[in-house]
Length: 376
Image 1 (cartoon, rainbow, N blue to C red):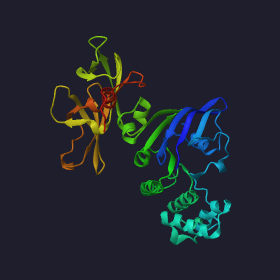
Image 2: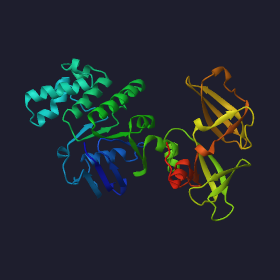
Image 3: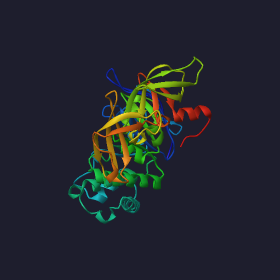
Image 4: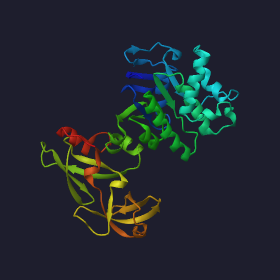
């Protein structure tokens, strides 16, 4: 267990910056996830931490130790790969014991540590089986046991669940999270699956085009995205365009004009002009009559029943369509297609960006931070 520091790390492939000035500190025992779409640089960053690649700029520290020139086998890491990389001709026991034998651990200790690791991943009863005859979930557990049996100070996991079916992925991510906390081992986890990242992580770094866009706890990333990319990549959101005006240059509040409706809102920065409002579907409230003067009129275009929830596509007066979700408490009372409804965007729970989507001009989190308050 140790702290990891990436001090302005940049990795090139030719002229392309696969990782661009990554500055990240990962705490001892933290489950830290690198999240982003394919080609965003997350696996390159993980492999740089592992020592498979060497950065061209910046420094990498394990604790207080500079490891820029330390080879992979001396970095005290365990790694779980996307394809598991287990030996099909060896038994489960032999696969897990491989790293210990390479480290010249005594036979008796190998037996004890391998069985301990297999018990942790619930495979001790299959110690003599050959992995080629086992399921993907079982092979993934073998790879995990092999990584933890060497008792590394850092565990690296590269898309370890991507080859599993959806139901098994949910179970395995829960098992991995539980095991990581039991071992209290610093873990860096790579995935493109937003739900997976939200479920397992202490903190998440969202990457795009090699650049770290935002670092934060799961609820911070989801509720208070720092730019349009993060808002759109994490979960589902509605983007609605409006215009912000202020009574004077010193005003800390602005007026948002949206479909001929005005809203007063505090501002994080003094801003005027076109704005982009990000509203999560679960924060859109639907009613059959106006509950207040700021409700927007719309019509239900489609209804999707999802068991636990109902998803609505609602067309507003200007032709743009937004999504709203409600819990299916009384499915027989769900709204119907073509029905006229009124929606409340609940701007207090929204995040408002400038016209480019790169700067936050309002979010509840930013206003609380300016006021010295904590947000849940």
